[in-house]
Image (tube, rainbow, N blue to C red; front, side):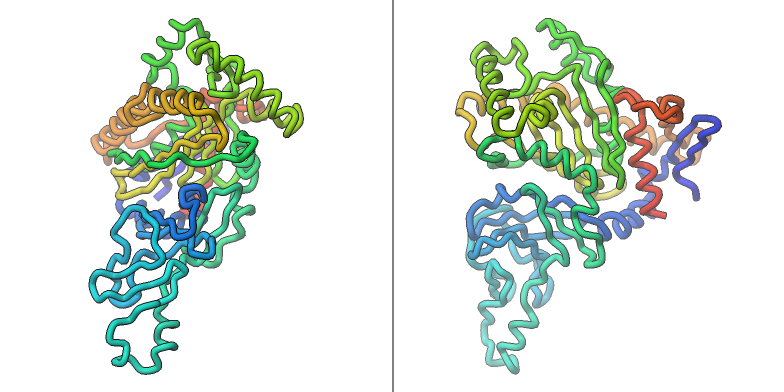
Length: 416
């Protein structure tokens, strides 16, 4: 069955809604996307110290994300090699050993089988221990502290996968003079919608004013003019997408707005001078002068607007997606600036903020409608907006649907 239909003569682009609800499509995605490409696992600063670990599910597979005693970042399948029991049942912590509660096998944080109760029952214990070490994920690589894994050993190298998206990740990583770090804690919420709806929503500037009308009204009350001018969408190749926004552009430390207070205005001027001195005027301007939403196929979103947020998507079933979100901050920023940043993040992109609940309501409503219109003549979603502009070779606007089309073209290619 054809899922993505594109007609450049008629300037139409549509997606069959089975892509959002079909168990068969979901299983194909698990094999051909989540099992066969690089996935964002986490950031190195989540596990800063030797022995630090986090457990999380990625592509349906339970993992241990840790830094071993020698400081090496590792990713293991969170399953005891003895009988497959979930090995670590804590979400985070610091340890030299992971011990299975079932039979008390214990592994070092580098994966070696360390303790084997009643080991005299096994022949050639050293060889047995070596064979039964924890299973590492086949591929692990990092870019600017962002850690990616792949469950297939045959994927191209990470930088090939990231392509042009790597540059925009680097922009984010270079904001802080002393580096960037994730704040402790994670926002975890579950959405009753397909994971691809979250991608579409992030790449969709068209929905901003109508969906977030409460926030838009608040901005207008503060004297800020909300427009769609100078807001563009970019196809970065490989399913990656980018929105660059210079209209609504308030960002802590980058672009000042009156609602941030006078003290932050002075600090913003100083921060710009520091960035120019450190990075040069062109790179400083590229980082500071526009908000960005970057999507790295298939599960990483970087929201550099209002505050800087990392989001990770985890499909659970066709109609459910788990989302993890971290606040990303400058290592050396003053305490009052960090407090302002956190408040700004919570009030806008936090799960109880002015934006995220709107977005969740929108794509949960879309999911319900997709289920309701199954097997009817209305069983297609249209994404044709802006195709004439795209055909002429013009730069797509954020309110067009070009970034979504780029995502779906790549999706169709890898799931074929």
